[in-house]
Image 1 (tube, rainbow, N blue to C red):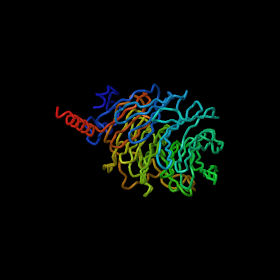
Image 2 (tube, rainbow, N blue to C red):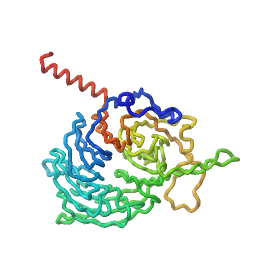
Image 3 (cartoon, rainbow, N blue to C red):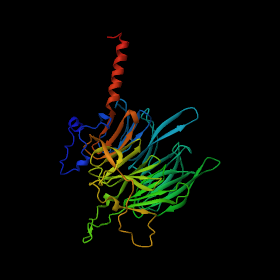
Image 4 (cartoon, helix red, strand yellow):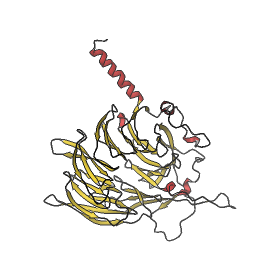
Length: 445
């Protein structure tokens, strides 16, 4: 349906694509049957951020920030000021007791930071000539401060005044920041997670101190999430941490182990490319963690500390972004956005993933007294991810998406486009209601 409407990618032949993932045109569980293409960017669109229930902002390699009305698809504002690509963007809501106002903070490769008013399109504050580009931003609304991470960690107030900063000694710098309890934050730097604590003095000044360094990952950290403090690495390591004392609660590692086809022969699986094991993104609903591992998806239960559902090949290319909040969704370098449902694993086990149980080892950390076991570990009650919706519209890699619940879904891509996906049945009802209201206003004409 979407391929015909958009003249997009041709469907792959059955020899090229796993038939299990060819859902076809009839998708009864997919409500996104209407779409609207939003144009305005002229380079890769990498970021989306929700401003309120009806507005979002997009940013990318063209240095532009565009503000959109997701009800109508109208472009409301065009924020110009950066001379190079946007490297990070976040919203910042200030409350003065009576009213609240949401602004946008952007960081760019031009080594500047800007505060924007999305209502007017004006640039309210700007900081130029930073020592290096900022890679990530974090807002702590409770303390009314925000942080920027890169080669150094900086703490700023709402007026863009610098409270304090700390220089980092990692070659990669800070690539991700999350908030932890008790005024603490976690910063991902290469293979390590550094815990900092912010202290607010009586004169409202803020200081930051490094209090612990977590060095349990064996490769670069690619994903970091709060709520459930968890991290994922390029080598396929998933670590669940205690958010209070920062000890390891669970450690999982995707491994390519030896497979025994028979008693007489032993077959070693070919070594995968590093990207096939890399955890690119993590999301959580508080009880489960959804990990994007290469082109696959794995659902991990925090309560049982086990993988409860999986799909080793969920997309044709690497998964870049996921969502596990009501609807389970993923997007990929292959240009698709897919909807999933956790279902019981059929018997015999799904042919598409014969080696799954041999890919996971379960246990604490890497502090083992002997060599890792090559025995296939059985995972009881494991289920699969069944494809329930396939949104085909982009011609390039889909970088991320933002859900506005009943108001729709927004995706962005390397094809320079945004697509606003809407519930077709709901939109039809709204149009009918609007028509009836207009007829009543015109006296039934």
